[in-house]
Length: 220
Image (cartoon, rainbow, N blue to C red; front, side, top):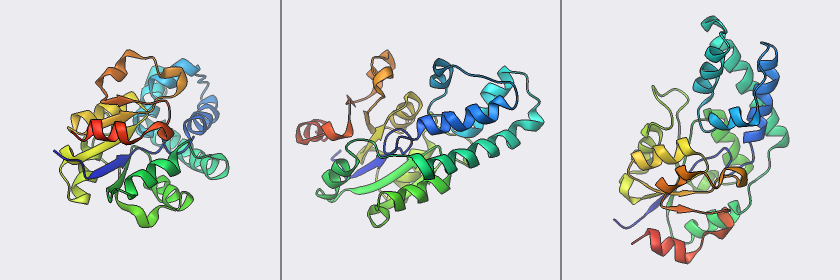
C-alpha cells in the first residue's frame, strides 16, 4: 500500500530526553537504596514509566504500595528536567520538512505522558502540523503492544499499512511492526549493533540521513 502518513516516537528520537529520564529515575531510586547501571537502564528503554518503575521496584523488593508514588515523583522530575535541559536530536527539522513537502499526515505516538506530547508540539513549533497524537500513559498496555500506534493511525483516518514509523527503541520498533506498519529505526550509537534491529525495515544513524532513496524503497 502506498504510504500517506508518518508517525514519530518522541523520547530519544525527536528530543534527547532519555538521559534526563534516567537522571530523574536515579535521583528518586536513590531514595529507596536503588542504584542502576547504564546497562540496566538500557534494558528498560522504551517502556512507559509505570512498567519501568514496577520492573525495578519488584527487583529490589520495594512494597507495591510505593509504586504509584515513585512513578509520580520520577515523571514530575523528568518533565522538569526536560523542560530545562532537553535538546533536539539531529535531523528533526529535516525529517518534518521532508514529509510536509509530500503532504503526509503526521502523528506522534509515545509511551510518555500527554504533557510531554504537548510540550514537544510547542518546543518544536509543530502543533499546526500534527494531525494526531497518542500516549500509552493510560492504556491497558504500552509498547511493545501496538495499541498506541493503532490509536494514532485511527485518529488520522489512515490504514496502519499506510504508515511509516520512526523509532529509537526495541520496544517501540516491536510495537510498530506488530501494528503492521513500516518502521525506520534510529538507535543510539551505543546500541546500534544490537541484532534486534533486524526486525526494522530500515536502520539509520540519524534522521538527517533519511532521503528520497530510502523513501522510495519503503513506499514500494
